[in-house]
Amino acid sequence: MKMKSTELEFYNEDGDACMRARRDCTVNMTDPTGKSRKLRLKAGDEDEDDSDDEMGEWIFETKIEVVRIELGRRGWKNFRLTDKVAQEEQRKAQEQEAYEEERRHLTEKMKSIPPDHWGITGEQLLGLVNKVEDKFKGADPNVYTVVDDIIKPMCKRAHVSYAILLNPSGIKCTTFITHAWKESFLKFVSDIMRYFKDFRTRVFWICFTANPQTWLPDELGSMLGSPLQSPFVIAIRTCDTFVVVRNTEINMYTRLWCVAELVLVCCYTETAVEVIGEMPKGAKECGGDVGLNASCYKKDEALLRAVIRETRLDANTLVAEVIRARWGAVLRLGRR
Image (cartoon, rainbow, N blue to C red; front, side, top):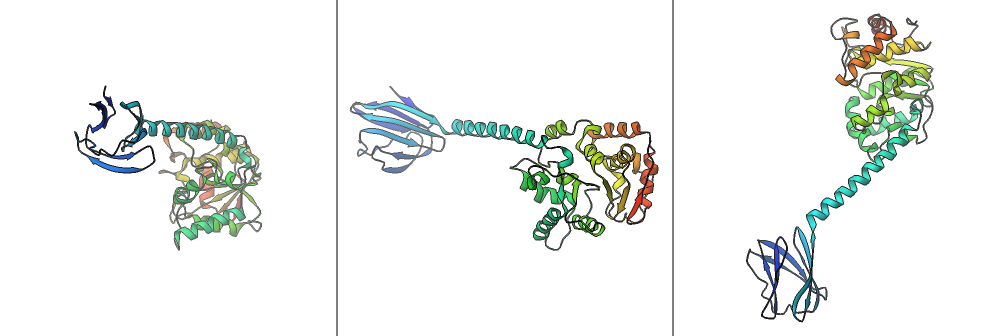
């Protein structure tokens, strides 16, 4: 009786135990004493070494499979095959299942911390500045780059936000920062540090450090919910300071989330709007792609526009006030 694997064939003939290659392959053959040798076989080749007569279990390993087979007095017996490819696929599937279970656990852990405790201190923000300066040597990358190259790799395993990575139990935020990701990161931090005398101890809610940047879209969606129940709005309502950090790279009010944050703080809180940073030269105060004409990810756009309309505030007027404000202005804008 012949015993076959994908690459090898074992059979007994005239009292001899024979092994033949079914296709070209390299076989690592280990005898019962643990002695090994490597065979490079063409399809149809047989192992012709008559010294291979040690009784006991033999192991034949190729790139894709492992055969364990016993040599007895009457030849081969107890053929056992392990498909290495299938085994590897099973291992990967088990690892993926364990990874997904861990993600679910860590996702729930992140959700268990109130969004208004997803804060980062000024001192910790300076720690991120040091990492950026070490990595980018003389350059000032935008926030997209900082998130992709530093924050995501650091947070991937823990599956939490950068703020929660640093503060696992969370810390209560006092200051909400609204800004645009296309800004220069180091200039962004510099403007905030210049504005606050207590910068190092102040606790900031900043979207790219507060929200988990490694989460999948459906995980984020389950956390964000509707705009009025999102972490952004919870933080806006509970922080006692709201700061607009403008920048010279992009008119931040071409981003609908920035427009929505401004409208929401004016509608649902008594908090003043404090304005720092500079706008791009010649930035439009209205029209074009500014204010209510701003854009964002398509999945968020309809919801954000509905939320802005519901406030019954004139978003374009609020935006224009912030755009034309001097550096350091404290604005008391329209509310219900």
